[in-house]
Image 1 (cartoon, one colour):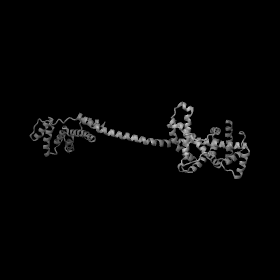
Image 2 (image 1 turned 90 degrees about the vertical axis):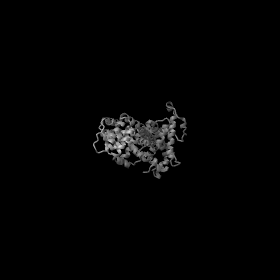
Image 3 (image 1 turned 120 degrees about the vertical axis):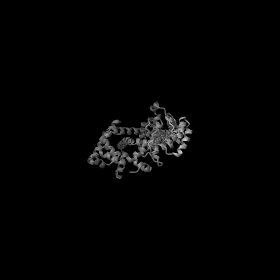
Image 4 (image 1 turned 180 degrees about the vertical axis):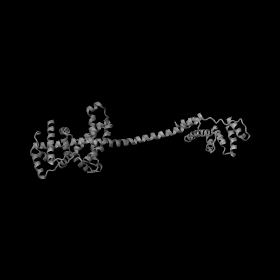
Length: 247
Length: 188
């Protein structure tokens, strides 16, 4: 091999044309004949072939690094898609579980918590003083006495009798409400208390009415209505509960 | 050639590879990499290993195609071939002493079949020398030769891009080849 031999520009180009198949038939015949008889020529041709191949291979190699830069994207997309799917289903399960737990715990814990709050704050309305006995209100105060003694059922039935004839009486509505509440019958208390607070007239115990209505809703687990009503009350204790609910 | 790899027939694909069609090469490269990466990662390799082995395999496949050593048998023959060569190359790495010293391998997963990969050692060495020489060639020469021999652009196109006479480009190309040749010969 005479590697050190210089290849002329013409020869190099002719060899290149031979390699990429662009020689004319005549040229190709001559070329092949020369290849057959001249080993040095043959070696030169192989040299050029190897060099051109090396150039291409190296160029490709460098190109591959360029290509590769685009892979992480496609690859991670493909990968993360797969993983995402898996991850998604994990996270879906997790989310579902979380929701179930959340709902469950709201249901499970909130009621006791609300009840606890309710129990902490609920004290039956002390009732009205019954010392003065005005005859027209005799039945009302008689029930009040029962109420104060904790005989809520009796108080309620007596007030109910009065309520038949005076359904719009704020005081009556209010005490029926708080009596039911004291009797642990929030559901029955609520309509009375609602009627109390919705009354147009200025009711002296309006703040208490809102407060007890709020508590009734709280006990029922209706936090929103509890908040709404508690926020209407000026009672400090109502504000205190409200702040606990908002926390 | 605006077609993508998966709609090209194998013979079209082979032709595109032979002419270094950048789009086809890129798609072939990027589409088949994830499988190889998965294989290498599953078999005690890293992402860097995967990239190296895949690029080597890719160049081998490209070489075989160029040298007509590869004849497609079915529609995904080339893609399968690329994967097999990657796998074999990775198996070789795992078997190699230097690698064994560092990591134990999962032999069950790697009972790979030795490919009919025709290895011509002296030729391979020659190729490596040329590649290294070209890699370190000055940038202007490198760019010119790459554009002409790899991207297969004509001297006319090149001269227009460089805003020079076609004949100047031709002479430049020759001088660059002489330079490269000198380096290759010196390395032997």
